Length: 221
Length: 300
Image 1 (spheres, each protein chain N blue to C red):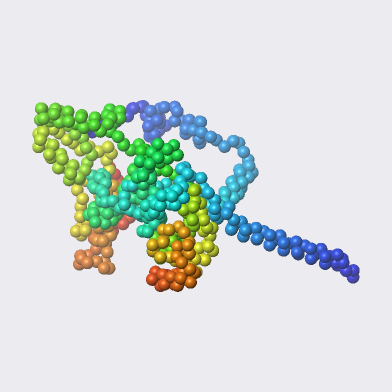
Image 2: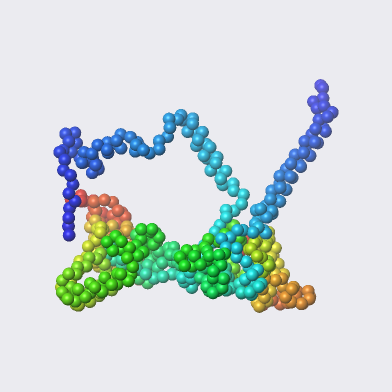
């Protein structure tokens, strides 16, 4: 009986096997990379808005507290986008002839809302509540980054589940004193040396009754 | 006030003296076209195509419908905060307003849920005796009425928009005129209502201008039209004559609650036996289905 396979078939088999392995790994790798790319997570992508609102100007230059506009952040699941009336509290007097702010004036006068484009968009099956994060000493900075350095609002982090879990596994590294919650800077810049920081955060975690929150139903309820 | 619509009277046709539409009765020829064709003359009709073409099209549609679900990125969303601060609920929180809706001569107590100043849901008011937390279909649908583009927002006078100042001026002139002739020239037409405020205002009007007249007329008549609300919780037997009071339509929704409570034995606080329901109706309804004894009778 002659040989079923020729001498070269071993080589062909190896080449095909390795080729398939490369293709499968490539496809899976590309999918993983794509899922983490800013194209899909929205990280660092500046979304166009009807009015080019600058957080840098309002937060860093003027020093308005976050809660002046995002008035629900301490009490509600939603921080809330301010109504045109809140803008008009100041812009009735300031820049009240500016062409850029015309949509605000029109909105307020005609009682027609401004449709802002959403920047931070979690999946619909995720439950997120702003107020509990504030109450437990997690500052705006932890998720929204240096909002005081953003001329146009963009997403500072990926907001993927893995990113959420990083903090939910060890919240102690992200906790800060109540007075710094609405200060959009890293805590290390606000308090002294690293050893102090760690001791402070342990102390804070105790006082906030901070716990690991990694049950599925914490966010998927 | 009763005025019958005059229908065109035609000779009875030899083949049939019955008719299905007013057009058929009047002998208008245009209705015949509609009867003979499946679609009206100007409607789109599928071009002559084979069964195979149809299957091809359907398969392609199914495929595309499936493909449209494979969107990679999340759809871009908008955030639309209200232009003015309307209530003091936190963003995303709801404010509930208590109100009442006058329908078919009975006010139903309601709570309206608003978010960012926008009413989004109407539910019954638990503390209101004509609702006890229940609503009927018309109360549920009232949310849509609030967004009806045809809803009157400004005063109209003979079909023209006028300002509120003009209305006040006209009313002041009318009041002067009524003072002169004791209200002889005044006649008010309102819908049936159980509102004590409307009643008091009408009484005030009549005492000031004794010759003024008012009458209650409804644009359309419903079965539930009563100027009083019964208390079914005290009944031992209920006889319903062509009244679908469990249908959550024209009747106060409290009847459903009261009936359900009166039928309850386990956990019931009163010592009375279960209420009996007798129904006489020409068409089956929720009430006749629930009745202990239901009798079908001819409507005439």
